[in-house]
Amino acid sequence: MLPELDISEYLANPTSTNATQFIDLLLETCHGPGFFYLKGHGVSDDLNHDALDIANQFFALPSTEREAIAIGGSAGFRGYTLLKSERTNGQVDWRDQLDIGPEESAPEYTLNDQPWTRLRGPNQWPASLPAMSGTINNWMLQMQPVGLALMRALAVGLGQDADFFDSRMTPEPYTRVKIIRYPAQPEQGGSGQGLGLHNDSGIITMILQDSIPGLQVMSEGTLVDVESRPGTLVVNLGEMLQAATNGYLRATAHQVVSPPPGQQRISIAYFVNPRLDARFEPLTLPEPLAAVARGGQNADSENPVYPTFGVNTLKTRMRSHPDVTARFYADVTLDDLD
Image (tube, rainbow, N blue to C red; front, side):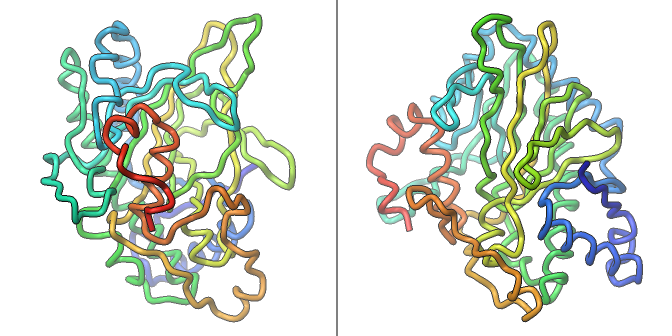
């Protein structure tokens, strides 16, 4: 069972006694299980419902309309990823999804610019679902201050000033949203893998789930089911915060199993991201925290965690989407990124 944290008192007055208690519990949780339910976040139930509803409408569109906005046409990795187009741990993930980022024009790119500047640009929205962009952008606007509040609370818990991360998070953070569908697999021959066991690569992820189960979190060597709880978001940390704290904060492995026959699962993941040029160097921890830090770098030498957010993000995206890489990043090698 994951812990449940209430952020409402912290949002109301981040210097109150109750807020201090929240900070202590947040730090303990992010050092321990690394996953938790978050309530009192202020994102309206109506807007959460609308976001899940528009997601269901999107996946109900004819495949030709979804494929018209395929991610392969976007240097910014924005758009629709077809079912069975991604793999984790060498096995096909049974999901399709729509990737959304900050709404902006494509940048003017020069040879002197870092490759990750190409990640900026316009989203792709389905032409026959004009309400989708407004609904999702409104939801993103309500989620953003929750993510910033978590970063400020963590900063204090780590012995820093509350605004320690602020200059990395603003202005123009590279916020990203994944709208994901996990369909049921064939009754015969399916692997059951909706999304394979992995760690998130970034900073913080906040997940809005529908009522269909499937998310599982690694806890002391055992996978634990994460049921949906109305009014809550599921929160976990990424490898960049783990690396920046020498492993005091934990990026916990998790996976998604496919739903039973006749069902599908919808989730919307909001990635609390900084600016693309932000760097997360190892910070100096208070001695009691440093004494129990586990070591933060990814144990897989073939998958290092880079301190520059844009580099780390581009690494992950290039590996996940070879079609986009071949079309827009043929001149980039991972060894050259940082």
